Amino acid sequence: MPRGRKEANKLQQSYATYIYKVLKQVHPDTGISKFAMSCINDIVNHLLRIIVNEADNLADFVKKATITSREVQTSIRLTYPGELAKHAVSEGTKAVTKYNSSTVDDSYSSAPTQPKLPAAAGGAQKTTKPAKSQRARVQSRSSAAGLQFPVGRIHTAMKKIAGGKRVGAGAPVYLAAVLEYISAEVLELAGNAARDNKMARITPRHIMLAVFNDEELHKLLILQCGGVISHGGTLPNIHSMLIPRMMKDMSIGGHGGGGGVSDNESGDNDD
Image (cartoon, rainbow, N blue to C red; front, side, top):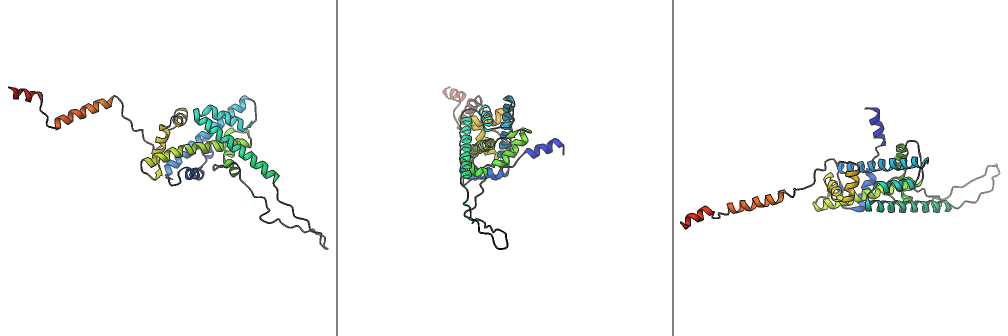
């Protein structure tokens, strides 16, 4: 395998576990096929690369060595269309605010210290471990921000894509919240399409219908990014110029099959 393809595969992360968690939040009774999960995973990775590259360019423009949540927010406003950008910015800001408040609370809340026992006659001082209920509970960054997507894994991917730049603490939290929001939007619309077709699992066909029937998702994923949904098929569409001709042919065929009297036959009867 060529070296460039190996490096590209290293940047390709799998978020299947977290996508499934988001799906169960949106549609608890709906499953998802393997190909559909691969499609959603490709969408997440593609949007991740686009946003990080745009944030990297913004950091270079203002001569900063660190990508912060401000650069991520600006890149989302430049990349996402319309109302999709407003909701994505809202979700990212909410996640960063919750993450900052939880980290401040954790820094002030510490486990109570145990009193030191007097030194024994042998000379060594005895220490006791705090009880399990008194030990500080380790909390991941995703749970601190109230997210399902992995903040740590996205932080690592951002550092690899940015190519040597530093990444601030709030940037991966913001980006994880935005990617989770986009995944939830696509999964919700795809789940509705699967339910309309009376199917219990989401397939690439349902993802294609969800993306093409939503104007902003179609503009983001298809027109701007040039994406193609594998195994999605095509939209059911009949050209408007063909519909009157079809209706006319059906009406003519109906009269012919109904045994109607033609003009020639009527003229013969008059004679």
